Length: 171
Image 1 (cartoon, rainbow, N blue to C red):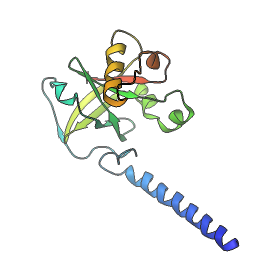
Image 2 (cartoon, helix red, strand yellow; image 1 turned 90 degrees about the vertical axis):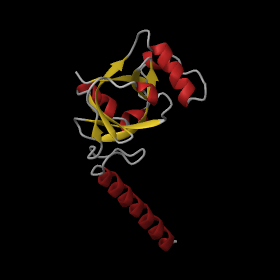
Image 3 (tube, rainbow, N blue to C red; image 1 turned 135 degrees about the vertical axis):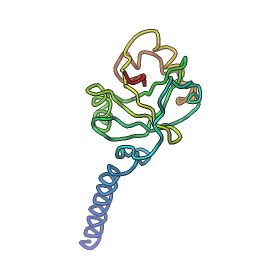
Image 4 (cartoon, rainbow, N blue to C red; image 1 turned 135 degrees about the horizontal axis):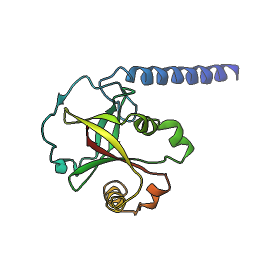
């Protein structure tokens, strides 16, 4: 019995160490590792000039973005509506969301971000949207694209459970 417990404990400790190495090592990577936050972008071509036509992002499932401060990157969903782009962040009122998702709070403090799509970098400002006429079309697009048509609805935003950020041009 003691041998089984030692093996189980040794396996558990090894798993924790391995996860720690992955999470810490990801901070030095060029971008996120799927759902694990990564380091700042070190590759990609900076796009300058006039505002892009964001229609190409309409059916993209995921993109990468990095906050400038703190300089960490992550993978996220993207919404395009009327030529502008947005990223959602759900579960903001759940305990797990509050522990796991620190970037929305960090974005409120400093919204400067870099979006990376197809190895192109776009400097943006994250601007939270909490109310207004955009809630209906944005939650409808979120429902269509990620919820299989299930109605998410503006109440998810006004209740604070879902946060929406516009990726506005850097001012």
